[in-house]
Image (tube, rainbow, N blue to C red; front, top):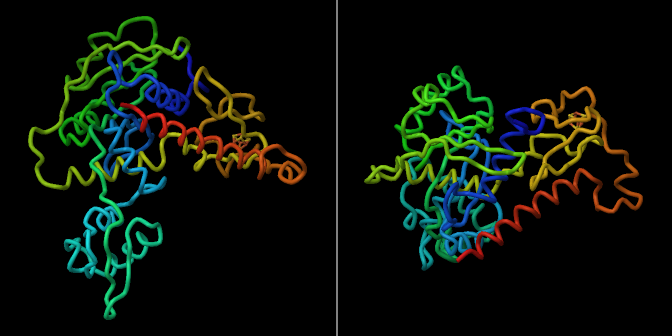
Length: 328
Ligand code: SF4
């Protein structure tokens, strides 16, 4: 059993990369796939989130740009009319004051998501394009590299919550392969609907120990679930899983990206090991800035290695979006 830094963080990054390459386990990929990490609601945050998308829908979504649309922007973009109309006539009442909607209209226009004009002292809008129906399924994965009896018991309640709320269509626990099958006693502590996946990051192979049951409700009980899922999918689209650099210190001279099989994961040259996100922070005692001459004198990557790391990760995300959009 091996994963970077032997930390849950390292395991999580490899799980994300595995999902990007190999989802779904034991099956052919029929949807475009986006993978993100640490997404959820106020009550519940999932380690890995896989969004299965309609490829043509995802291509249409990309017309709205690379950044995520938050709930206020989604309200404007999804309801913007084909013909010019006063925003208060055109958009459904959002349940909060109109002045916030007006701000969102300005924000949407500044990102070219809609068109806006002023007529008779009123702000009017119209859409540039229809917001597509691009999300097919959302799959939540809880990463537990050491799935022992106490971990299974501790997870049981959270997973029960996931199954009952059915915000995701399918729920899995991913664990590190040990060479043994997961013991039936462990399964008893987990809801029967939750799938169990063993991942081996030496061979980059997976084994399904238990198949999940789809928990999608037969009928949508209103718009709340749909809206929350869309907000999650938008976050997954905008951030992906490579946004780990946002909460780490790629501006530190010791920060590197190193290969682990097909994944590029952080490496700390000062600690000479894979660092966790928690230790690679402002409080790290080994942090040192990039020397200024790395940024100015002939360093091959404009802006120095820190900026280079960010750009490399952003390029990888774009490349993956291209690949997934091109899927039949
Ligand atoms: S020295 Fe600290 S801040 Fe710098 S890369 Fe290592 S863990 Fe991150």
